[in-house]
Amino acid sequence: MRHRLLVVVVVGFWAVMMASLARRWLLEVKPQLVPGTYLAVLTPERRNYQTRMGIYVPHGPSLERVGYTETVFFYGPDEKYNITNTTRIEAPMTGLLSKLGNLRLDTTAVIGKNHALERLTVTLDSPAVKAECWGHVEGDDLVLRARIGGVESSERIPLPQGGLVASGLSPLYALPPLRVGQRWSVAVVDPLTLRPSTVEMEVVHRQPLDWAGHRWYTHVVDIRTDYLRARAWVSRHGEVLKERTLFGLTLIKEPLPGGTEEEGK
Image (tube, rainbow, N blue to C red):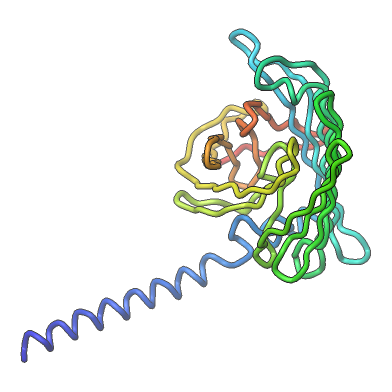
């Protein structure tokens, strides 16, 4: 009898402690701080926001700049966001990167007042393929229509309410403040095939990174698909400073003209 009472007391104490920790976690980690959602990305300071990254490929012992990718968040009078990405690779490439040479990629996503995706468009122009894609949300699904080389197709994929959809060279637009151990996923429309997939992200550790004349103490984010691996270095403000992409390219954030950069902590 005494043994059973002791077990009940221990289990009860453990249950109370776990409930207390869960409540504390929910209070400290607010929904708008959870990565992988538009609610986390579209903070008030990003209502009219622009970020630009140079695109680099290996060239001997160094890196050679071959283009850029620029993302603009515009908050309109209708209280919706238009997120546009312009990507240009202006140099021919060989080997596995040949499909990315002389590439022009343009994407637009419209985000409603409820911080959920409403529709998106993707256009791709390259020597290897010319393609267009249109998407809109129906209930809990993202419905995609694509035209590649004159051939049309359609696909429907599940999309969590408020879930983020990426359609450029990177699944990371911008992020909330991170902590080691966080994991999340993002729906991605592959810009070369216009086929959807899921990319998994995990914050694995912190690491210093020299960028723009300062030492930044970044969170390192591992990016994974079923068969590819990539990595990003993210500042404490959620700015992606450097990324080795799933396509084998390196992206490095470029300071905007007239902008100021604060040293990372």
